[in-house]
Length: 109
Image (cartoon, rainbow, N blue to C red; front, side, top):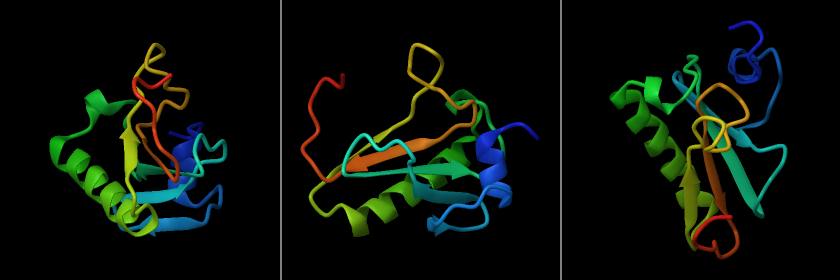
């Protein structure tokens, strides 16, 4: 998709400093962090939301998020996937939020 922000990041058109990347996913710091540590994990391929992602790729996204969190957030973390307007999704390219560096409240606000 030519007008998708995360597709441009995945293609390298918009530069980011990767925290982790492989041939299928890239992780980078969120520009509007909601916790001391907040990064996103996106697939390089465009999927509008989590309902479209093949199970194997979704597992790969979660594994990548957990791998990075393990090194950066030794005291725990939260992984969230916002889907649709009521779920708080603002970019129509599936992405995992990984947050940590402080205690997380429940329920989320």
